[in-house]
Amino acid sequence: MTETTPIPSGYAATLADLKRQVRNARFGAQRRVNTELVRLYWGIGATILKRQEAEGWGSNVIGRLAVDLRAEFPDMKGFSRANLFYMRRFAGQWSADAIVQQAVGQLPWGHITVLLDRLDDQELRNWYAEAAAAHGWSRNVLEHQIRTNAHARLEVAPTNFPATLPAGDSDLAQQLTKDPYVLDFLALDGDAKERHLEQALVDRIIDTLRELGEGFAFVGRQVHFDVDGDDFYVDLLFFHVEQLRYVVIELKTGKFKPEYLGQLGFYVALVNDRLRRAQHADTVGLLLVADKNDAVVRYSLAGQQNPVGVASYDLLPPAAQAALPSESDLAAALRDEPDVETQPGT
Image 1 (tube, rainbow, N blue to C red):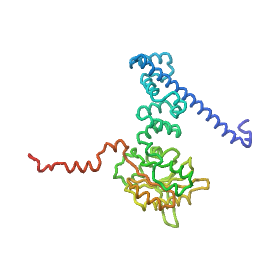
Image 2 (cartoon, rainbow, N blue to C red; image 1 turned 45 degrees about the vertical axis):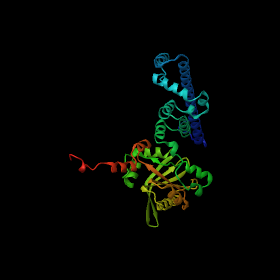
Image 3 (cartoon, rainbow, N blue to C red; image 1 turned 180 degrees about the vertical axis):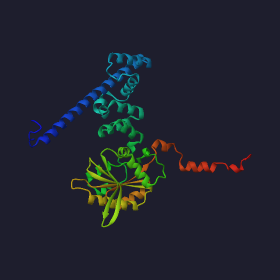
Image 4 (tube, one colour; image 1 turned 90 degrees about the vertical axis):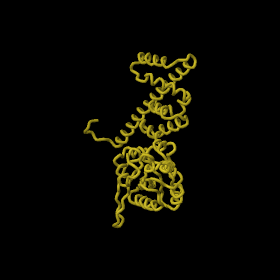
């Protein structure tokens, strides 16, 4: 068929299907290669462990082993001394059956080294391995999720979704939430104004989308709606391409107040009416605040008819926050500070 030959009906659909088959085959081949490589590395690690236990192999022997393996297989890049130590640790933390049956066997080797380096708890390693495999996290995203304690934040924001959405849909919508959201990439302090916070999130939209989670697409900032001559502006509007729903996000730099949910619910109703299509799931709203009283949030959510949730945000990662002195510590330090004017010699 030449370029001038009429294209038969169904050609476009057939071509799209063939492209999908090729992509699936390529992806499947890559996964099989990766699985075999992971099994190989586990086997090498298990052999080293066995020899260390039986013959007391030390680090010098492992270094020599790395040199000899690289000499025998110069086209393979995985036989450095450091990587052999990773293989030994890998075999020590997961069994041979786990490589076949658990998510860790589906991950690239670089992801596995991150799990070994960043986590000491084996249950947490398995949790992050499962999440990374299920959501297709890149290595950088996996590092970010571990650093920001994703296991304690995902799907836990207080919402009224069970009361305002159908059962299955409410569970899906809850999966979009976190509490708190860690916005340390913004390089802002706690005194930042709402418009500065909003602008920083847009300026760093890639990082913002990474923190929100997979599937979010940015629609706009200060999205304008005209309601019979009155102007209204949604802070941030997103669309979730997997759940096919709009997500309205409102920002408040202070502590949560019940009236904030009235405004958010109004915007959710507005987006539902003006933008939502028949094939879309219900729009949901998420209020991000600097601080909140969970009891007040719970009572406030009960009075809302539109699906909304409330989450706090942190401008510092959990580790940095833990290192900071508490308010009571600072107050005690100030009380104990000697009065300079009364000290001898001043």
